[in-house]
Length: 254
Image 1 (tube, one colour):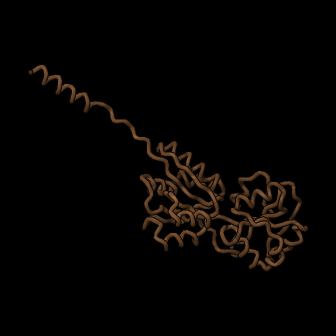
Image 2 (image 1 turned 30 degrees about the horizontal axis):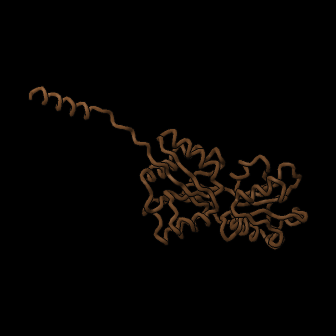
Image 3 (image 1 turned 90 degrees about the vertical axis):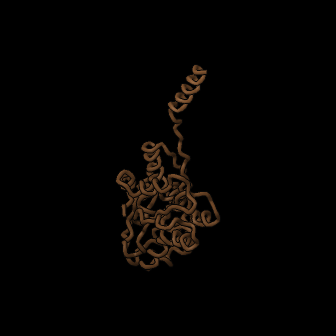
């Protein structure tokens, strides 16, 4: 009987001594503006290397993403290319209270295909219509794509919107507009400076004056009902490691 008790006690001790099986954290799902594609993927890789948690991304126009989240899409975080769409989600109660911050800023650029010889100085009344030479201006759709709305505002304030309003190549997101120019399908396009820096097939003709459009701000927020680890990644986005990556991709850290 004593031997039996010894075996039972020894067995219990052995079971408590077994090492715990490490739990692999579930991937996070981040919905982000298309203009963040390269930078956010680099941040996701760095975060996984540091923490072991994978990050999955869904990139599209901010308006498209915001509507998906409003309809119940399973996002843990949302990083928008402007505040308007984030505000709509906040009003709809789709964001975690106290888990929203302005993350990044940017500049608006006029781009042309790499081989183009177009030269323009961006100022009131500049001859953008003549520079198109019968071609089209690639921009994001102003009603859904923040970059398109910034472009329309800037061109209107500079007094040249009417030169191009009938010669647009509207795109589903800013990366699609960039691709039109890179492939030579549009002689000019308006995108973010960070997009232009990521595409070797284009060159920057000029940057739009900051006063010609509202400040370009990228807010980030945790979505209500987000899974474990979302708050940690949210804080990581504002940390020094992520900020260094964003700067490398030509974003301004707020």
